[in-house]
Amino acid sequence: MTRSGSDQSVVVTGVGLVSAAGIGVDATWKGMLAGQPTARTNPDLAGLAVDFACQVPDFNPTAQLGANLARRTDRHSQLAFVAGEEALHMAGLRPEDWDGPRVGVVIGTAFGGVTTLEEQTLRVARGEPVSALTVPMVAPNMLAGQLSLHWGARGPSFATCTACASGTTAIGLGSQLLRTGVCDIVLAGGSDAPVNRVITASFARMSALSPRRQAPALASRPFDAARDGFVLGEGAAVLVLERSGQAAARKVRPLARIAGYGASADAHHIAAPHPQGSGLEQATRAALAEAGATVADVDHVNAHATSTPKGDLVEAGLLARLFGNRATVTSAKGVLGHTMGAAGAIEAALTVLAITEQTVPPTANLEHLDPQIELDVVSGAARPQPISLALSNSSGFGGQNAVLALSPC
Image 1 (cartoon, rainbow, N blue to C red):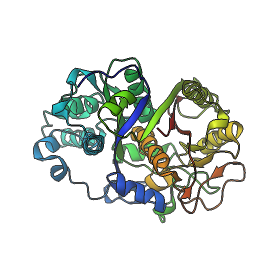
Image 2 (image 1 turned 180 degrees about the vertical axis):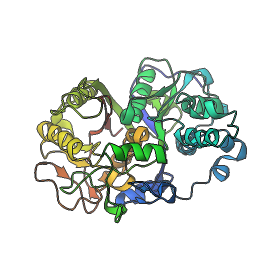
Image 3 (image 1 turned 90 degrees about the horizontal axis):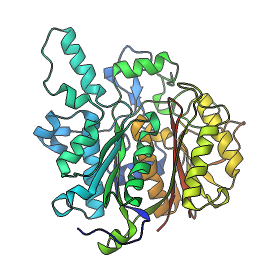
């Protein structure tokens, strides 16, 4: 594969998704358009204050990946492998045909292999030997490492860890590797599988999770007046990024353009957002500046909006100040829950699909918009609309903020 010409525009040529709405882009997009919540009671969480979550249905690692790969990888890596394979197929790429040193992998995760860590900790407590593969299954860098190894991608390999902004950060950094000419192809995205007893109990102890045990499907309700916390979820998204000149040379039609990226730190609190959303505003304006756009150019925002009382209000206040009612707003978390380090990548992928379909999915469970929120939040049903510039926002513990600006090609 030859290096592309002078065109530094970064485009998305493939998308792969694994979510609680289903395995694959089609299943996830269908679930989003239907606005169908996926939160369900989980027997593995029985006895905890919160015993429900959003998990990928019918996921069989051995059937999906083969026995050997399934045996030596944690669930968060397994989800990323499946999403990555779909993205490569959509992009028309085969690893055996590419120039390995020119292919990078940037994948975000907030927690790494916590499913394996919990399992192996219980083995230690029972006096049983742990797996010799524990460390490489748990270490956060091994998410990118495993994918690089599997596909022979010998360019830069990074695992971004910016809490719930990790997936967005990965896509932003991946686009920079292309713009600076370091890589010709970057597989970028995020994956997390944090639904276990320790992580669930910890978030519940912080009063971050919705306690609606009797009606879990109604628990995640971004921007709703009755929201009372988020629902923990799992999933993965991988995007194939290339410069537009190379995509044209391959005769591949891009799905969307990564027009801009911005990142910032609140430097305010370990968990709470800045009350005026100043860090998120800084990241938003940086993404727009890189895109050569202004706030007046934004048609649509895929919001972080986790369904927490404070977080949604802070983000909504900022979006209202910047965009008023000019831009439609949606949140995926009413359907998919909060997938932590995968959230930003999943939402970026959904924003790509919204651009290609010129349709905004509804925010599930939004029955009564919080009267303090002055936004055009799409709810009830999907809304067709022209989208020429969209933003995908992410924030996370530690004051992490990351924003992507995306546009049609």
